[in-house]
Structure formats: structure tokens, C-alpha cells
Image (cartoon, rainbow, N blue to C red; front, side, top):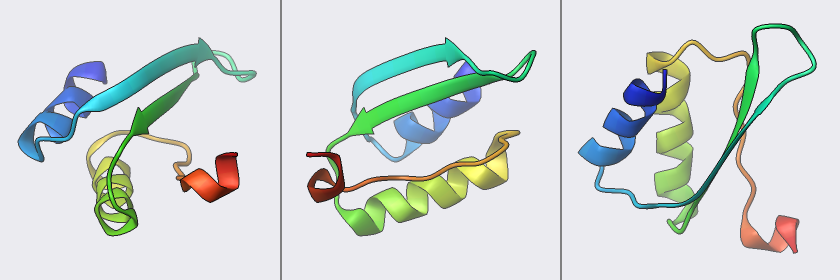
Amino acid sequence: MLVRLAGIFSRRRIQIVSLNVVAAEVENMYRFEIVINESEAVTVKLVQQIDKQVEVFASSFFVNEEVS
């Protein structure tokens, strides 16, 4: 799965600022927190691409104003 994610970011030439992976509450599931510095439009397309290409339970994104 990590190789698929890396390929998506690499093809779009998006640099990952931070990557955090932890075991989720559900057995055999993991939570990925990926931080990037891109526009909202690029991020929306990236999340949609990840949903299509990688077996995910759910994906979402937050903008700087929501995180601070």
C-alpha cells in the first residue's frame, strides 16, 4: 500500500512534508496522516485519486485554518 501511495505522490510531483502511520482501533487497519503543502484544489484531486487507487476505509483533508 505504501508503494501505491508513493507512486501517486511521485507522479504528481507532490512532496510529502510529514508521514505518520499508526495502528488503528480496528485490527489489521492502519491510519496514515500525510502532510503536504498544496492548494485545496490539488489536495481534493489527490484525495480522490487515493480513494480510487488504494484500498481505503475513508479519507479526508484539512486546510491550515482548520488545523490551527
